[in-house]
Image (cartoon, rainbow, N blue to C red):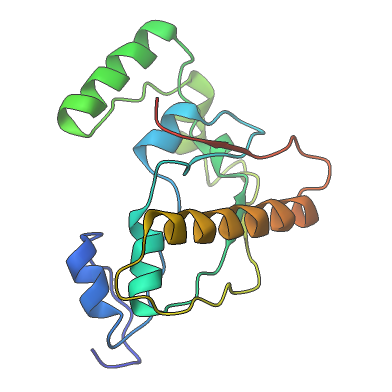
Length: 173
């Protein structure tokens, strides 16, 4: 792992843990579950029932840096349909995937990017949360770190999007 190389790795827990022995990694909250709950102009993340990244940080003593991205939800809007949402929840539960159906505006954003500039997507990094190494973290240790992360993420969001709606942190229902 030469330090000047930048590469993508699997989000597999063991691969991430091994990589942290040599390099830092960036884990960006988001994915299929957030795609299903986020709407334009909102900041929602499914984090209340996630433990892996916090366990990993505790086991390796790796600092966590909160990151907020503004404008991403507006780039690819999917059709808002209760039927589609139920189908996607079933697909996610069974296969770990979902099928977003884009709105006409989203399709047009893909077709005409060179003629009509899109709104920028800005990412902001907060102050690192220092983490004490704990070989076998308890659920309470994980919850404490997750709570610290959410507080920092909330504070960062308030700084970078002072007029936006409050962030929403969810578990996966």
